[in-house]
Length: 494
Image (cartoon, rainbow, N blue to C red; front, top):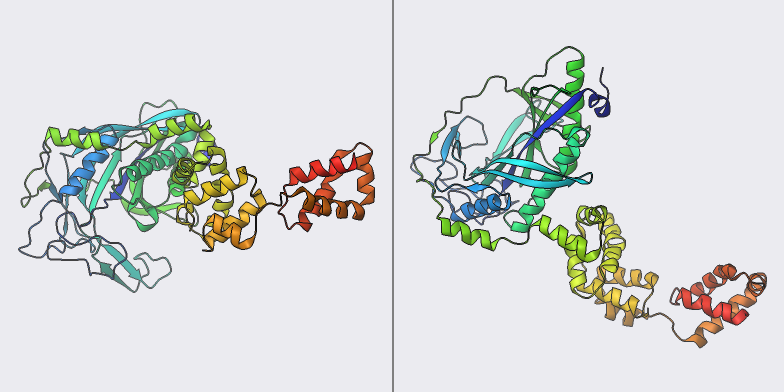
C-alpha cells in the first residue's frame, strides 16, 4: 500500500491541470446593471435580468469583454475576432435561470501560456482557453456539522453573486513535472494571481471566492504512453491548498491502483483541516449540457485596432518586474520569493522609491513590520504605516539619529497612530545620545561597577567590553550607539 506522496512518485508520473475561476472587478454584473459589491445583505443586488424573470433581456458588459481580452493578452493567447455566448443548461438551486450564459466552442481567448519558475527551472504551463461567463449565486446550508448539504436542516440561497462576470482560465494538461508537480501547480496559481492583480481586473481574494480553482489530477505508471484517469477537486480556495490537493490526490490514486482497484473519474471535495479529498459526484458519463447559441445576445467581434490599444495599455507584468527588481536589488530568486510571499513587494518598491536602500526596505518590511502584521492578522500592506514613513525611519538610522532599537520604537508608535517618524522622535525624545561627554559619564559608572571586566579589557581583551556596553545601553535607555560606546570604553581603558 502506498502511504506517502514520495513513495507514490517512485512508481507513478503525475499530470495535472487547473481550471481557475476569477470574478472580474467590474462595477456592475455581466448582463445587467446590478452592482457587484461584496458583502451586501442577501438578495439586495438583484433585478429581473440576473434573476432570469420572464421578459428580461441581457446586455453584454463591455468592460468585462475588455478585462477578458487583457487577461488573454497577458497570458499570450490568441484573441478571437468573432465569438458568441451560449446557454449551458443544467439545474442547480443557486442558478436562477436554470441555465448559465457562458462560452462553449468559441472562447474569446485561446492557446496561450504562462511561464513559472520552480526549483531553479522554468516550466511553461499551456493555456487552453480563457472564456467569459456569469457566476452563480451562493447556497447556504443551515444545520449540520459540515456546512454541506448532507445533514443540513434547510438551505438558503443568496443571488447577489449571480450574474457577476466570471472568467474561466483553463490550462492544458501539465505532464513531466515529477516530484515538483504540487509546487508547479501552486506556482502557476501564484503567478496567475499576480498577473491578474497587476492588470487590475480582479481583487483575486481567494478567501472571498473571487478566485477559486478546480484541480484536475491523474497518475500513470512511469514510462507509460497513456495518461491515467483524472479526478477534479472542486473549489480549492488557497495557494497552499492547491499544492496540498495535488499531493493528496497523487498519494490517494497511487494507493487505489496499488490495491488493484481503478481510479474513478469524479469530482472530489478538498478538506482544509486534513488536506484530504472525498468523493463528490461521478463524471464517468459526460453530462449533456445541451449547449446552444444564446438567442438574446449578438456575437462579440472585438476590432483588431481595439485589441491592439488594449495590448499597448498593459502594465509591466510580474515576470518582467521580477527580472528588473532582481537585477536592480541584487536579489536571489529565493529572496525575491520571500518578498512576494510576504505580500511586501509593492511596499518595498515604494520604500526604495522614497529614498531607502533596498536592503533597509527589505529589513523593515520583512522583519518588524511582517511580525506586527502577523500578530494583528492582517497583510503588511494594511498596516497603518506608509512606505514614506519607513523610508524616513531608515534615513534617521543612516544619519545616526536612531539606532535599530529606537527605530523599532518609532515604528511601533507610528503604527499606533502617534504621528510621523519625526513627530514621534521629538515627542518621545528618542534620538540617539551622541554627546560623548554624556556617554563618558555613563561609561565611568559602568567601569566602576564592573572593575573585573575593566581589568580584562586593560589586559588586552577588548571583547570583554560587551558587559560594559550593555550597562551603558541600559543607563541610556537604549539611546546610545553601541559601536560608539564600545570604542569609547576601549579608549578609556587603554
